[in-house]
Image 1 (cartoon, each protein chain N blue to C red):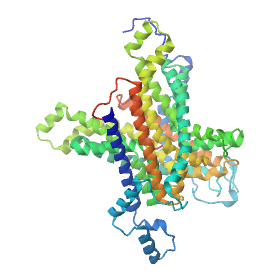
Image 2 (image 1 turned 90 degrees about the vertical axis):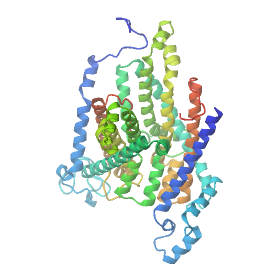
Image 3 (image 1 turned 180 degrees about the vertical axis):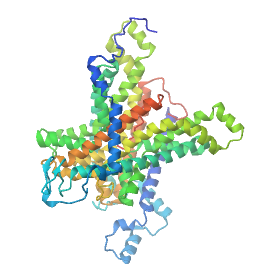
Image 4 (image 1 turned 90 degrees about the horizontal axis):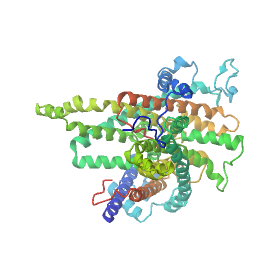
Length: 305
Length: 309
């Protein structure tokens, strides 16, 4: 116990909510990020509701129109047009669909795979446990992007393959948490009681184990979503992501790169969209973690590179 | 200790072997690998000739055996694009990538650790808040976008740093780009690790017996907080080698990352195999080195007969 008034010279007490911090903390990052994520989800679910344009409509007369300029058709192009005269804002809105769809599908795939492997490791134990956890160690240390681009390069650029690869890069966090939690829950008296009254293993897992890990899984999945969105964009940037005709933020960035010196907006806006979305999802994850699971202290955001 | 090292080396062999299985599997499960070698206009007869010449008509296990037998001797075949043995090509590109990764890690150590320590010591101050925001932004920033924006600002607009060229300047922008994420992560981990340590009783003792603030923080706290930082730096190195794939593509930097992208795009299978195995070997050795460093940092850690570190 520190006696009252004893102020450590090294360990300064946290100074909270003093004048200059009020503004900083008043922004309420969690609520703002929730709004951003909601907006991106609306873009992804109903792009036609946000913009009337066609993301792939080519207007060769309106190439490289700067932001806020008037197109020959008489409309104002909010964020400008690209090298084929396609509207950047429209493509960003449709690009949100690519990011969210692949992010969500990859997280779902990783979550199911990781949960399954984590449960198997914990319940079976022995050889299955060692093999699964060693595999997890191995994957944690190896830059998965190398295998990812190999797989995409050989199996082809399809949405399914991108989801598969991004999902495969993400399962370890889920497996670790589910395994640890299952091992802990297994020793509890109520699980023993459930076993004693003849509950089947499947039922015990559904009724007692999974509800216990649910909160942690949701938090990990949120961070995983941020990582997956970045991973998809990275693959598309390398030209090894979604097929080229589908608008994606990473692909737009790569296309705009060669016009960087004069037409900055081609690659600037997709990057901003990506950054804000990923930041918002991460902040949402922080908020969810504080709300749902005060025990998970470390960031479980997994990233490819 | 010796047993521990032997155990770890055995584990390293297992990791490398698993990767050869994965890479071989990916290439041969995709259907007929001959298709990757022949042109689009190839006739069925061309296919048969090339399939036989490359040995793809042999049983899969036999093909893997021959691949492995050559691989352990450092022979991954000839690159389709360069028409040379692949291993020397990869090893020739490796120093450039390692240079980049070391520079990025160096930035993380020099800038992020002091920032993290200061944030923890002045917990809740304005600098702590700014550091937290910077670190979070760094973690969310798409690497390739950061690289492009740095080129736009420092090469295109200000003309301070050439995009291409030689000399140490060539390294600056790629290293900052690659290091941004490592810096962000290191700052966060240093901060939380130090916060954890600063709470301990022995630090209050150290302070009470009249040691200077610098001694308390640097000698007593940082040394004990260093283990998680070191672990994360080790993991980051793997991530950095992965990140190099993107950063080298952005900057046209001639390292292993750019080589691997070109190999994949050009479907240069022998080269892909060599890259994956070489990178894995580098990482395995590095992780072993880090585990041994733990002993130096924290004499309480002793590796006995089991190696469940």
